[in-house]
Image (cartoon, rainbow, N blue to C red):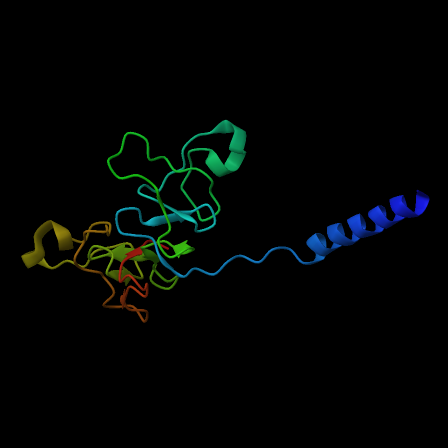
Length: 163
């Protein structure tokens, strides 16, 4: 009887130490979330149509209504026509990538990334190039006198959000 308890204790400790010293690896994404639900959550297993968590108190910080992230557990898709979906390729990344740190501001509908948060003034484009704060729908980036220039979005989808 004592040897049985020792056996169970030994293998129980072995299993615990295995989990402690070899934590599970984050799974690499196989593809992208669809455009209708572009934000990966639940470790990439699901895709959400909005960039916001649902508030569900039992899940704590993973469902607190903040900006959705890959490790979030809840999607705020209530009262929306587009709903969260299972990742079509198994494990997904966001449909929209991120602009690089050297050019963190998305513009031209997310197809380009600008190093400064300011539009270039180019009168023929009107309000989309008037020298104001750069927005996702801006058409001009004020990078003329900078060593770092605007770049095309590096995401697989061809669309980026701000860094």
